[in-house]
Image (cartoon, one colour):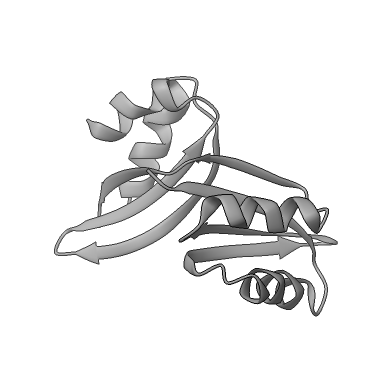
Length: 127
């Protein structure tokens, strides 16, 4: 399964551009990306087509990041769907480091989660 990277950025103009350009200059194709920022700190959550190369770009650029296995989960596409799965993960003692919205099909939504304990999370996300 692909890795998911959560990359810390300064919350300022050009921070995302610099990261995206560094990845593009090395030929790293982004498969999914999301993120945000508040105050001085921002972040990007991403999956790529080449995890090894993305890791090298992040390391060489001095980025602070967390990397974890991208765990797929279907969530009921209704109010409370995300709340239910987030509660099950919390009750299992699993911390969510990041998640990406993948898509919506009928009454289901697909997300990719990266967590602190994949082995604890897998049964929760598969159930």
